Length: 466
Image (tube, rainbow, N blue to C red; front, side):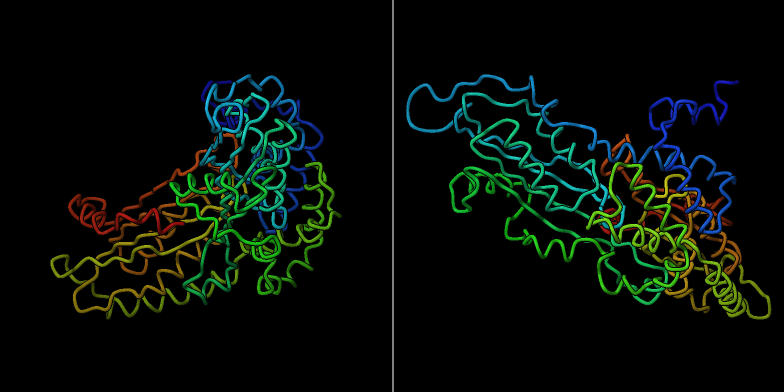
């Protein structure tokens, strides 16, 4: 077998670890089988290129993302407590006796127990040492990660981190603040009607023990004061009840009505998700997980769009006739460049069944005197190709080819996206962003035209993705 054989590479270096299919555990095999049922429920061929290894990739990602169930805090903390004296003279607090310690901006991810989609969080941990000992700083992050790598809700996650640290290192007190970000993935019908769909739900939660228990205590004020350097304001924290009600978009009454008939018509898919929960070591009958299989299937069904394709094709042909009266095309000298920027999209990575999302920029030449394409049509084209099992390279090409078929050729498309698979698997590259480009017609041979279009893209595009 050659060293560059595609199948061999996937087995040898997938996710940075060697994969030997002969050594797969029963839980991994069970998840693979469940993922095949889900793909078949979407009408996909599990043997087509791009999907052959998807069941294994999904199984690995889920098991890696929930490894916290098999980890124990005491195994992390033991051996990481170090002697450190306090002040030798005078009045005050420092060192191993009362000196506040804060670790800020820990980037983590977890899986939402309500819908099984990954969510991002930034964790801030503070503790007050006692008994003239301190804990290794890296252990604060590792303890937080143990509980993040489980199916979670924000408030319970904060409480579990706080409680584990309090019992593990026995400090005078612990404080935890989490900034959580959950993707609000729209369904295909609603996004076509709501161009201002908000793509994220953000919450800020806190948990505390010991000397942090009194919100008016000086220690709590010091903790919050240091966090203000990172733009964290405690006034934005929510009560426990409000977090539970507002956190996961799948719990909203409007989302509950969407695709409910489709979910009911796919009991095999719902049973497959329940099987995945069991394989991860969870109980599908746990109160917080009872609706999770239906929520996940409702989201996944977004990527079954055969009816939308027929409507889009008919609409595109009509527009093409309007742009080219009598079949005549104006010369290049009588054309001007047009662009539509920051067209939002949401899609689903076919390799890992994880969301990716971002913005699309489209540039094209259009004869003077002819009305350029409306933003609504271009946004519809973007959504049409977004709501599929996709890869970003293919998405970029398909948008460019479709717009080109309407206009006659001269099109450039730039897609900027954040991929959940870049944070919720072993690589965990937070803040990374991927850009892809497709150039057709004049843009493929005219560097000046390409440069002109790229200059039109605003510098703050990355911030618009969130």
